[in-house]
Image (cartoon, rainbow, N blue to C red):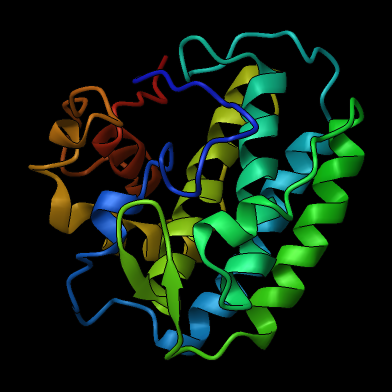
Amino acid sequence: MTSHTATSDTTPSETSPAHTAASQTATTATTPADSDWFTLQKQAHREFGTRVAGIQDWDAATPDKEWSVRDLVRHVVQEQQWIPALLAGLTLDQARRTIQPLGDDLAAEWATHSALATSAWQAAPADAAVQLSYDTVPVLDYLREQVSDVTIHSWDLARATAADESLDAALVDAVWTVFEPQRDTLEASGLFDSPVPMPDDAPLQSRLLALTGRDDRR
């Protein structure tokens, strides 16, 4: 797994595992309708929140190489901190000035910023534009990216804490439509290790994780 460094000044999507793929998602018969992604965002946050609630060892290692459980949760919370400001139309520089350092209670910080981000998503016009670190993109591209990021990291956190690793089937289906069209370019983005060989008849969750360099068989 490619390692990342979670810092307070990381701009949104610099360490997101989905930003390369989300901006180029192919439209297929199984791609969720635009409105479904707002529902999927809530489910992704429920998945991550369930794993956060079960953390016992915040210093445990994670599949993200140099990240501990604390680092992983901090990264995901920091991504949520940017969302309300960016969806309100602020530039990166303006949004950065609204970001406050996180406290030590990361479970409480997750609860706070997950709720704020979810409220912002529900109020966001689907056709608005959002300035990110790599481009200005439609709200729905940013939303797909964030759903994918939180979903994949939910599995990372589950693996790190010996929690239930099963992800919601609708989330897995949706995130597959983001990553699969980019299977040949994910490693080149610098955010992933090489895809893990996986049988075609493996569960879709296993094949999704394999695209991102994760192997749920071990």
